[in-house]
Image 1 (tube, rainbow, N blue to C red):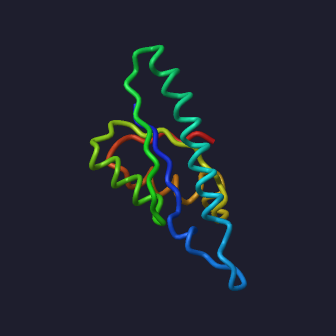
Image 2 (image 1 turned 180 degrees about the vertical axis):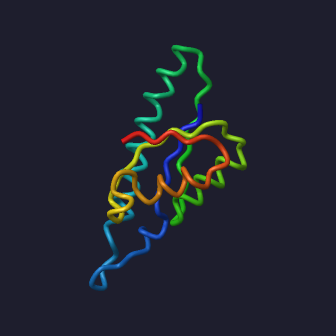
Amino acid sequence: MTVITVTDEDQTMQWLNDTPSRQHAVDKSRNAEFKRIFKTLEIQAAKFQIHFEAIILQSNIIAESIISFATKKNIDYIVMGTHGNGMVKEMMLGRISTNIALNASCPVVLVK
């Protein structure tokens, strides 16, 4: 089982009113939280003898990064959550999840 999350690397370079953004500190905190959650998942997977790998990708093109990762790693199946913050047409799923579901080379299950 491979679990990935994608963070937007461009956020760390943002400035607001000539002051460096707090986003870099937020990203570090968020990545630490991801690592903590991944460690918990790894422990649970080990109980069932499931190989577990957790990866944090940095990219500002989330859907394309996930699709590329899945293709390069020959991922058999994608399960992902949805946000639903997109336009009316995409409100039930979300832009990123819709893009992945339509363009991935493997089956995709979207969880709302």
